[in-house]
Amino acid sequence: MKTVDFSTVLNETIQLCGLDAEDFSTSTFKQLRDFISNRVRMAWEHDRFPDIIRYENIAVVTSNNVNYCVKPATAGEVLALWDRNPLSGTRARQVTFHIQVTDTEDRLVVLKTYTEGLYIEYRTSPPVLTGTPWNTTQQYVANSQCYFDSGSNSGSLQPTEGKPYSANFYKCLTTNTNENPETHPTIWEKIKIPYIFAQYLARGAFADYLRAESQFDNAIIAEKEAEALLDSEIDKVIRQQGQLPKYNFIKSY
Image 1 (cartoon, rainbow, N blue to C red):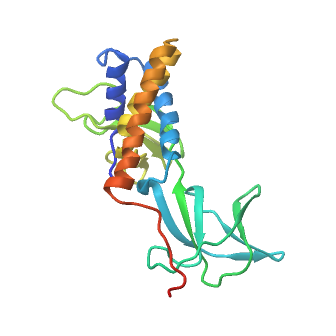
Image 2: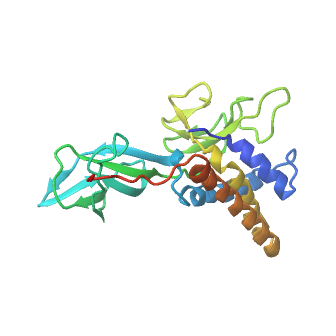
Image 3: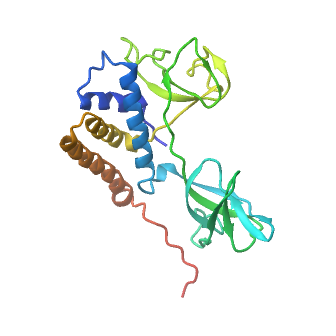
């Protein structure tokens, strides 16, 4: 999946909002971070973008005469269940299911057993951005986040002269202090943002910023511009790339 640096989206948002990138406070950073994070989910769940759809073979479990699959931890919305790999041919058939949520897992209940399991087609869960600039003295525990610029090896909110500015959010995998994400990839995991959403995120966050400033009429215009950018990405998938829904043929005549 082609990705975009969060700093690229952030800088475009800053420019649209008319803010000073050289005098940018942490509180304003947090505000725009939250706006963009909300927009990530809106874009993520807007349509069937190939970048974020996955297929996986999962086992069918039988318990108390109920047959079910357990939804993978990385899965967001389940788009379909198939009786065989839908990517390997045209004879895969969709399997009817309903969702049962327990205290520990999400189950996809089916009507019969499948000895070779089923193939689940799902949209991955969108990331939630919560991190603040990386601090050398801060202890980070698992699942916490930081914002880190790999160009300057710091948590700077501004580019360092003479160095590339490539800042992103990273999720902590193991408790640590002063272990930067650039040189410790086993301790930190980069949170990836699809490139296709970049322009929409900036324009959408700009619309949210205008609402926060009570500029409601201007926010409506910015919102329409953001939606048009997202629609253009859908157009690329369907019209330009020809990624139409798959038709399976069960019988031929």
